[in-house]
Length: 310
Image 1 (cartoon, helix red, strand yellow):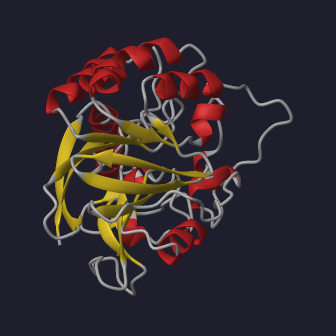
Image 2 (cartoon, helix red, strand yellow):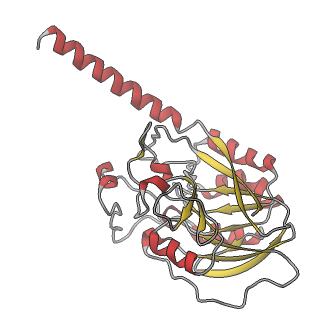
Image 3 (cartoon, helix red, strand yellow):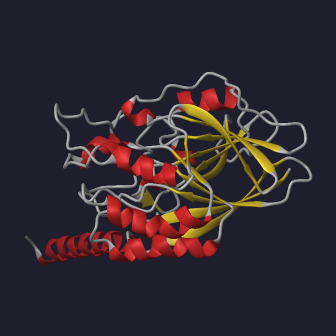
């Protein structure tokens, strides 16, 4: 190899190693994003909603545990957890310890993701570039304590929206809720309209909750009259290209809506929600699979949504 080629190869290798090192570091650069959503009925006071998703917690992640614990200092009016909380069979106790301030102080709601039911497994990362990135489950996949997690959340008063409807009154606003089990595992069964609904003397918000923002679920929630839908799963793309954005969403949602606040449906992701549309917030989440502990141009996050009057 001539000297020029050798230098070029060396420079490329150094850049690759540096980029990989930064991508690993970025998994620890936790942030809280602030987003305002003009979705409440006229006259309603603002509601502060903390959206937490995709923690993928393992017991050794002390920095992440401390950061989640400190989210209680935000004193939200409501917490929405859109799943994939655990990434290790022993993660339940440290997870509940991290979430303790939120479980004790704030009403909440939750749905499950695949990594609440099953532990992550090694797989070819190139699968994420396929049209359908789902890996078939093994005949006996290692399970996680999803039932115990749901029971702990429910004991704290959080509403379980696993393929069901419910209602909740927060800050003088009646929340009419609908949620589904994880569409990424085809566990979603959209619940039929039930008896939950608003009373005439309080402002009403119709809210949909799902782990994975598959189009069939978003379309069903929009048709159901949801004013806003909250989802996770995408990790915001996890590995993003500055100026281009996410390469993939790990579902059939378009790349332009991989994270953040958008309208649904809409020809373009920058079209707002509102009349004839539904606000969609997709969390980039705060974790990764332990077998792919990298993020690039996509910091781990929780989001404080300020819901305000239209």
